[in-house]
Length: 91
Image: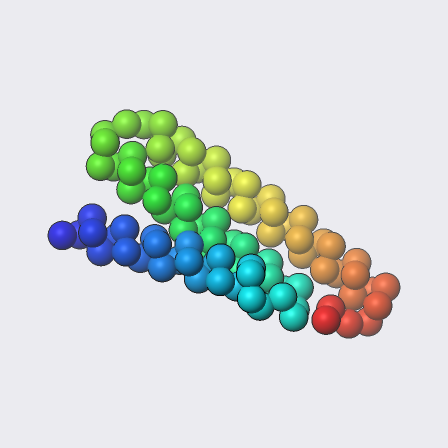
């Protein structure tokens, strides 16, 4: 039962991120947040698949995706700060 609830939460995270990426492109920060939410949903699905199958590869992929999300957040924040300094707006 707990696995199905976790899978549902992961799918909701993924679909929320995809919805934001496709339809909410008015602000750069909102777009980046939606990208992070979608990436978190995918990472969570990998961890759950690894838990269900008993394989370690899913957890390794989970940690690699979280590392990638951290790097992407830092790089995205640097780009937003540079863009704001040039244009004085992020819209």
